[in-house]
Amino acid sequence: MTAVQSEAEPAAAVDVRFTLAGEPLAIRFNGNVWAVAADPVRWFEREPWWETQPRVPVGAAVVDVAVWRVQVRINSASPLRTMEIRRRPTTEQWILASIDDAA
Image (tube, rainbow, N blue to C red; front, top):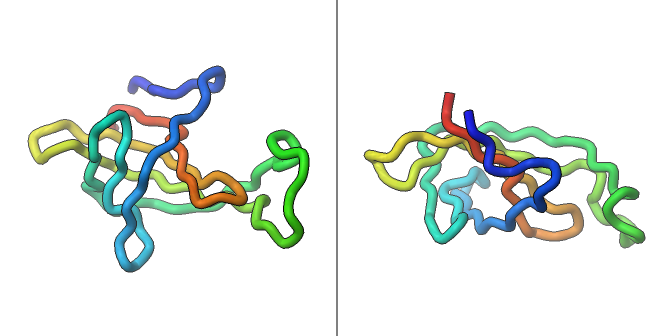
């Protein structure tokens, strides 16, 4: 597997299109639209907000961060890739945490 992101590199912002049920349907990254090709998996992680934000608005949801792992492809003939996307705390912006060759 070849990861695109590393801890030293900043994560890339991505645009995510969701189904009516709230699951990722497609992800725009690096000028391409990647269609979700398998059932996505969601979980929540604890975010150390004090390391990334000097202040947090009262009532802001910064502790539990939504994370999705999705298998995607550009077209039906392209190989599957696995993306992990995270929602930035206090925003609706999604970031690409990693992208790997599908296992």
